[in-house]
Length: 149
Image 1: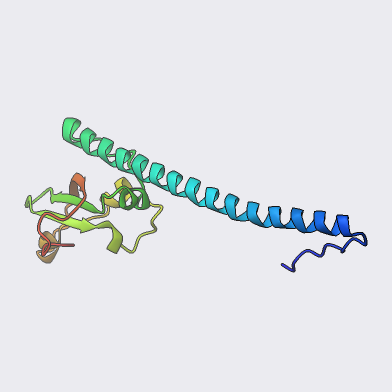
Image 2: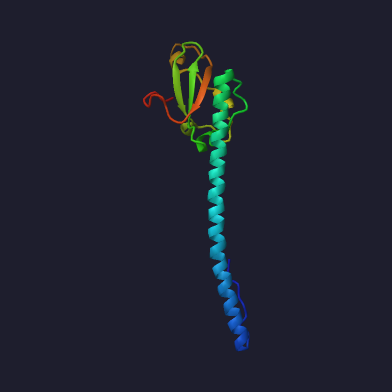
């Protein structure tokens, strides 16, 4: 955007007043930009805290009732809340696996419970079986770093 043109007044007093007002306006833009950045940082921290609380709520529901897993956070909300891993267990062989939500190719706006119904056990898939996985919990880190799916 082109800078705004302020015609210079003819009288000296008006020129001084215009220069003073322009200086105030420029100073005010800096102050308002700093306040905006501060408010944005506070808002992002609150959103991160809300996403973390939502993930903790889902984990408590899974632990206490064993489900239902829906409604659940979106993949983005889980990652933003610090819960980037999904711990699952095969319903057939009971093998536990950790799924990195950040590494998935699904849209980040998908809900975790929709994603969980599509996850399958790799061990059973090699034998030709395709049992669905049971979700254990959302986790902040993998149980065994070498056992990612």
